[in-house]
Image 1 (tube, rainbow, N blue to C red):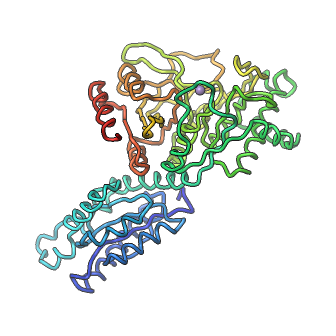
Image 2: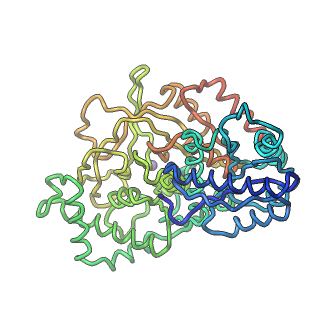
Amino acid sequence: MEYKNSEIWFITGAQLLYGGDAVVAVDAHSTEMVNGLNASGQLPLNVVYKGTVNSSAEIEAAFKAANNDKRCVGVITWMHTFSPAKMWIKGLQSYNKPLLHLHTQFNRQIPWGEIDMDFMNLNQSAHGDREFGHIVSRMRRNRKVVVGHWDDAKTRQRIAVWMRVCAAWADAQDMVLVRFGDNMNHVAVTDGDRLEAEMRLGYHVDYYGVGDLAEVQKSVTEAEVDALVTEYERCYTFADSCKKGAKDHAQVRHAAREEIALRRFLKEKGAKAFTTNFNALHDLNQLPGLACQRLMAEGYGFGAEGDWKTAALMRTMWVMAKGLPGGTSFLEDYTYHFNGEKSAILQAHMLEVSPEITVQQPRLEVHPLGIGGKADPARLVFMAHAGAGIAATIVDMGNRFRMIANNVDVIEPEAALPKLPVAGALWIPQPNLEVGAAAWILAGGTHHTAFSYALTNEYLEDYADIAGIELVTIDQNTTINDFKFQLKVNEIFYK
Ligand code: MN
């Protein structure tokens, strides 16, 4: 269980028309199903069975209880028999958390020799779930519909994806995001409506002067710096100039001091994500690079140059991916390698790439930073491993947030990059650079992304549905013609 303080509630719809015995049977079957789901080991959250609901009052009470219980991050509904759906109106009107409609049935197969009318009346999910689905659609309410037998691995996997998104959604609802300074002057795509973000996506964006961080830095002791540098020595390969006694070692100690101060500051504020800005460093010795890299690997969302939208999204994607292999990071489109169908983008940043996305032992190096006008910052240098992943961003279109997702294939570079002083990833956007980059640009996508190896389109689709925001996906099937059409249709939909 990756999400210890969260759970999913399971509510079974029924009615009293078929008699008390039927309700007892529905209850027993539901209990067996929920026990089976939990015993499968496939689900990242515990499912708690909350009984059958047989009237409008019971349904409303169940959903209101779900709203008010902090542990509950989502509700699964299922109709074993027929549940007249006018009963669901009041409950659905009040419910304000994610909803999954599990369209399954207790028995896997029709018992050919035994089936009679009593069996039909008890096992009519095919019928009752359509009635329920109608009212949810009639109320224009987003939900995930999962179809399949509850004891199939594929069905449970789709529930597991949604559960991870529910956990990340709940995490975002009390997310505090700290910005040191504002977003970088004149940059358009990193700006946006922070009020709308809090109302629509849940997280709260706060501003602090970088001097507030410099103040905390004064409280860091030499003994604390010693201990953290020892941890660096254990985890990373030090460049010769960074070793104890060598010329850049003092900069490694400055980086450790910044990391301790930054972590302390974020903990004090209860923050889950943060941004920095190389244009506003004042009393800091250098741009915190190593600190951002290591904090990202701990699950803090990060965005450079004040990019709070990407910082929050990175945190949310990290929470979705918690415990899954592969890693999640902030990245930036930097330089192209034009090479026909294998044309690729070198992803990197000035310093800040999470070591979660590499299988190499990172090298700790110190180099000058051409911008910012401060001392040489320490950073971890590595290349991301090969594999499929997904890059995503959220942009503010003025009247709505648009999420843009692109499936990408990370590849090994053709040769070593001995002079590249930062971490990076080389990827081919699907379906290829020509179409992938064109679609991304037409959609107004950022140069910053949140990237994960662990997630698929299904996670982001579930997230966009829960948030009620636009999602456009660029994948193997994208053509520019269809993509432009989708953007135009969406303009009307979100008018
Ligand atoms: Mn940047």
